Image (cartoon, rainbow, N blue to C red; front, side, top):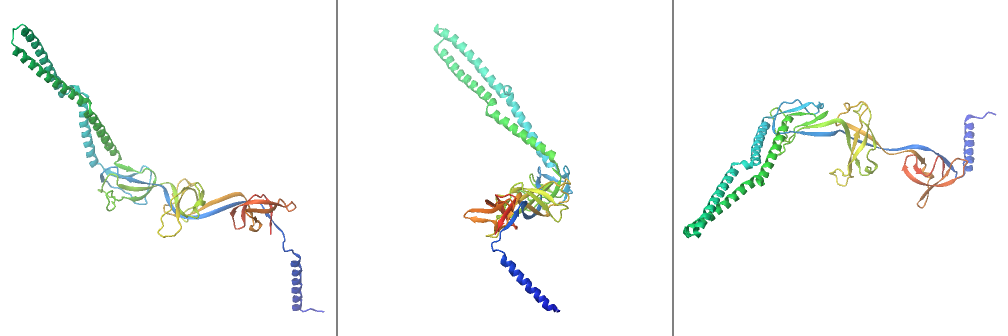
Length: 409
């Protein structure tokens, strides 16, 4: 008997349906499923974006007041270590140096006068006056002794003796005054006046030395190989920024050049307050960018303790993060330019020997977490207490098990 095709298809469908019903009815509802667990590498990464900046910036200031000579610098220009950057006219400085030298020489003369004070005309005059007073006193004492003897014999009258006594007393006063004057003049040479003169000499010497040393800075050299970030700067007294051109008058300490050190680079970025605790110093960082010829490596060198100010009230706080870039294999950063955008990948967690199990395998009894575990499918089942680590797409990282099998209900 020939069976038509539609009829045969209908019979096949009925047979399949009845077979599936028999199969599903034979499977128990609480079938045990044992999942293999083995060691594996687990990493958590966070991606950030930032800008490339130099590892160091320096502001080169004018060493003294003067006039600028010609220069050939421009922002963004590369300079080499030891290259001449600016030259200054030293005419005004040389005037100050000569004035300082003249003041120093004057103070040297004053100090030298005190050093030879015993031969000073004031001391010589005071000594001479004292000697004259002493001689006069000796003569009067001798004359008075002679008159006193004659008076006792009744040869000279009393008024003559009394007159000599008065002269002697007056001379004694003059002798005391001369002695006091000499002491005062000698004290001047070894007292506060001499100390003040020596201090003024030291001050004058230091000022002259400092001004003279500034002459060696009439030419400004690049302290390292880098890039010129800006030229000129605001005046110390306020006002418009000063542009650098030939003949420009500048003051001491005025900003002349801002220079970037290209011996190293760093990347500045910001992280939210919810993620900042995931970072730590010296964490490895992978750095890429559209302008990079190859990926660079680095490490976290600074995590700010102070959040940046945000104008939007209620927004989450953000903390600056500094990544120091490692020296590339080529030895320099010539292919990387300042201001380039950079993408960073930071591994916030890594465990080369982690165990990942499905969420359904974990059982909770109060505060205790456990799993049913066996070393092999033919081994005895045991209950293991576990602790939870990181959460992943495939399951949970757990501690307290080894390679084997866990039961999933």
